[in-house]
Length: 181
Image (cartoon, rainbow, N blue to C red; front, side, top):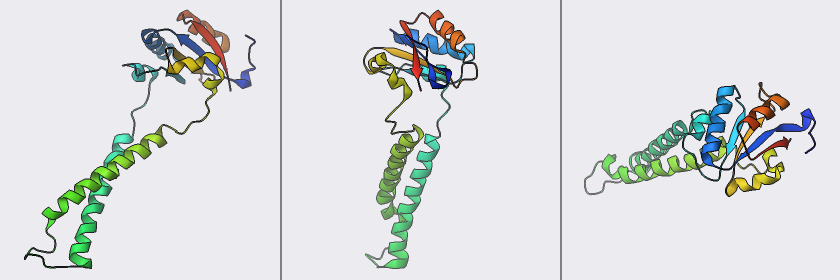
């Protein structure tokens, strides 16, 4: 394969045949000092996220805030309608009979938390992503079937084309490919 010019290179990708090989390669890359790399697998591999160094997600905080907004919004909506907007005395109950507000408050809490989860997950994952330079590698189509890939980006501070290639080849992959930008 002809070498790609440095400014057109996105990174180097190594292909592995088993999930254990990919996990070991990701751990070795992190220990070697690489920080801008990613791993691709057709299914989840326990420990791979930690090996790649994914940061903790902010999604739980967003979901809590979304649920809190739904809870307070649902309660306030009912309180305002029953106490301020249209106060009706029904069966001698007080206007702000909060036990009757619980079902709708609960449902709006769940609804807003769920919507926040979906929207937050899509946004934090940077989706939709219709194109990624990894798609330029012909064998990368196997990442959704039965192959495992480790991609070290050229933007990494430690990246040197020959040294990184030697490092990846020392991990005994099936193939090392250059990824065009």
